[in-house]
Amino acid sequence: MNGNTSRSKFLDQVRDAIRVRHYSYRTEQAYIHWIKRFILFHRKTHPQEMGEVEVAQFLTDLAVVRKVSPGTQNQAVNALVFLHKAVIERPLAEIHGVVRAKREKRLPVVLTQTEVRRMLQNLDGVHWLIACVMYGSGLRLMESLRLRVKDLDFDHRAIYVRNGKGGKDRVVTLPDDLMTPLRRHLATVKNVHEKDLSDGCGEVYLPYALARKYPNAGKQWGWKYVFPASRRGIDPYSGVERRHHVDESSVQKAVKVAVRAAKWSVPTS
Image 1 (cartoon, rainbow, N blue to C red):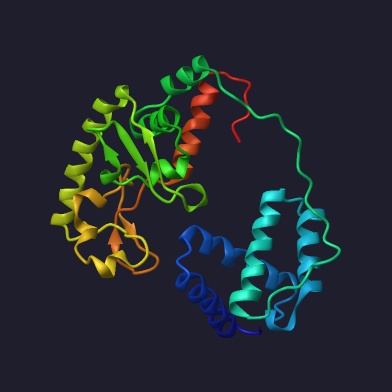
Image 2 (image 1 turned 30 degrees about the vertical axis):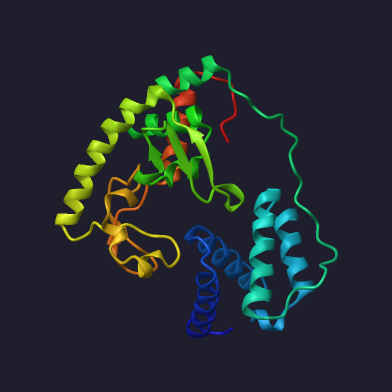
């Protein structure tokens, strides 16, 4: 694993294995991150030359020295299991002697209706609308951000959640109070969409092989994100300039600011 060229070729092989399985870009970034750290931890030894013992040493270091959370350690486990099964093609056997990260005992926080109203009062713009959709319809953050225009059914007051947690689809209620704000918001989004089309950048990302099966669908209004990003960016897969959805970190930061402004003593992470 000496030299940047060999390391790059190996990671390209990992990326190819991830993409052929249609994993999300977020998963790809996470897996590449942990595989890099695993290799560097063992002084750039090639993964082909390592096995369960080296994996156990790395995972224990994360818990004992780095003091990562259980969720973070589990993410590293998933990355290394994938590496050995899909890339090296030598699945890991049972891993012994791993020190598990300690889980902090914390009571779940349930906000009252009054607290939710106070938080929403300290949000504005698209962040306010996203939070309203989440709390009003019971959507998770990424489910809200990945909504497409066609997923909103105003006639039946419904929101269609595609590929939610566990890869399942479901239908939730679109609250009456959000009908008008969402219609106004979509009118603005459509103007942005039409400007993107005129600039030659109006094609949106489509999941899996839909872009090949329906080559014109990416430019259709129904496939646009309900909450598009304020700026266009370069798709890391295709290199095409397009507009993705709002970044989840911006919503999380806005909510934390709203919580502080409301002067709550409620943990937000």
